[in-house]
Amino acid sequence: MTFPARDLLNNWDQQQNAYIAHREERFAAALDVLAMTFGDDFHVVDVACGPGSFSLRLLNRFPNARVTAIDLDPLLLTLAKEAMIEHKDRIQFIHADIALPTCFDSVEGKPQAMVSSTAIHWLLPEQQTVLYRNIYHSLDQGGLFMNADHQRFDNRNPRQKLMAQMHDELTQEQGWAAGAQDWDTWFEAATRHPELAEKMDERTAIFAGRPMPLPTPIEFQLAMLRQAGFDETGTVWQFLDDYVIAGWK
Image (cartoon, rainbow, N blue to C red; front, side, top):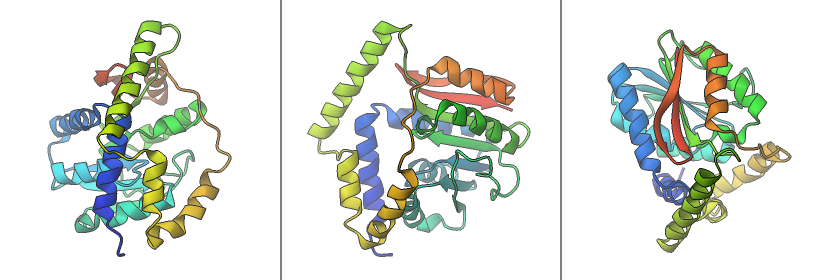
């Protein structure tokens, strides 16, 4: 591989920060909860890892942890593997669709934790329900699942919904003004590298025709975690409609 994987990952983080105002704070909150729960030595699965933003933070924060990173996107997974090359002894990559019940079949043993960031909202609500049940059964007893993502307000919370929309728009304006790439521009830049460009057609074919899910509120998320079997559920971090939710087994 010859493409600048870490530079592309850094640009991805800047791009995502332009859409998510306090993204680093919510990563930090999730990492703190993991540290308080498991210390430094545990196995964690990064569900829909993308280019590896969460995985890299896990590896850096917990030098004795093992990470399994799962994603369906062949372009982003190729980038993640190269960006994490220095940690290759502690991370395993799996190409799988988290919408399918078989997505965790290749995970070794029962991990203590599973995490995800800005990904599960791409699944239909009924697929999220199946995924949460799958996560519950895949975790070790005493395990923890955390999801960092937007859980949108609906018409029951009109003031908060409007405030969240206004804040998102302001965050993006500030991000673009500071030079961050948007989603499309990031992919255009990434595919200038032949190793990633050759994955673009495969990526397009995989995601073609997938419906855009309607957003779900926090009540839905917590109810589905409880329905999946988690003994305790709750919010460990929030800013407006951006949350880190958790389920304890």
